[in-house]
Image (cartoon, rainbow, N blue to C red):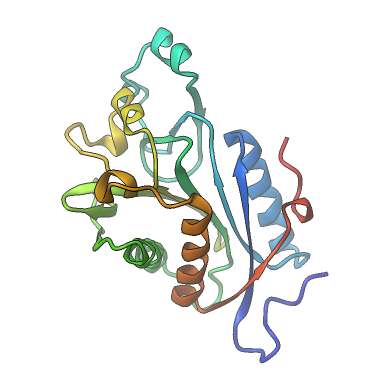
Length: 238
């Protein structure tokens, strides 16, 4: 049963979070939509869904199909699927070794500001990277929106907001095979250099550890009370 979105002292909304492991992109999208409707109807608290995807190129609302540079044989050989998305942004890559975060939260009434929401997501990622010894910066202007370290892009953002309830979110490269970005024009930037925690530090933390740090940073920035939720308590991905 929902707890009306507040903790015991009635000051912080509850954020139920989970790490699901690897989930197909379409299944994760369906899970987001279901979670959004549960929140809208007051049947569930806000959620932060953390996971990885198999190799996938996604096209946001501003994407040009021509920004997928790889041909069909290259895609097939590498097991890459293509998915259209209603998130903002252009073309990006999701794959193993990348922590993807989907916040399903209600920005009403106190955070009804899309720019602020994007800045807050970036701050979550900057703080998360600091936990692993990296000094990152947020860039706020198109086409460079994201989080950067040493001049390289380490995290991408793309969101959708419907009646102030959020879906989609961010992708943080932890131990990502960065060669997959060569098959696209990442986020519309032909000369961008992508990075990961592993490429920047020489070692890859366990992605579950990065997820835990991300939850803590998210709740600090958004003033939420974290509560874990078992994956089976969510609508089961197919």
